[in-house]
Image (cartoon, rainbow, N blue to C red; front, side, top):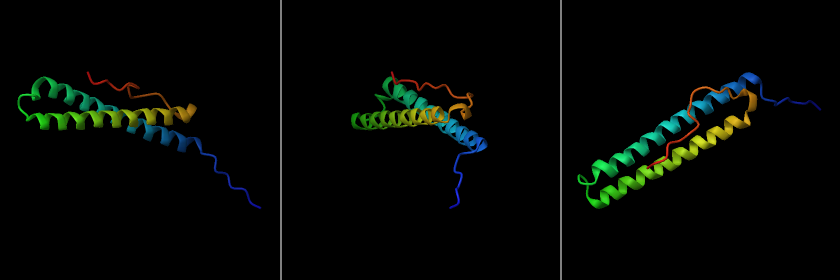
Length: 99
């Protein structure tokens, strides 16, 4: 019987780490924009929108923030699972919290 080696090669692991890092950075950026939009809506948008419209936008921004924060966390976990192949580089490792 033949044996097939399915052990990931180092370069493949590094490529996966780069893809995870890119997705993490993207998710953190979207989460930050959603938090900023939610803050702006709280301070500037209340008078310009109908109450139901403001609530709808606030819920959408909050959901987007949470979804992207979760995505960034998942990507960080993926990076940790790759161990030594996960090169530290760009990315803050922190998602801003909506205030």
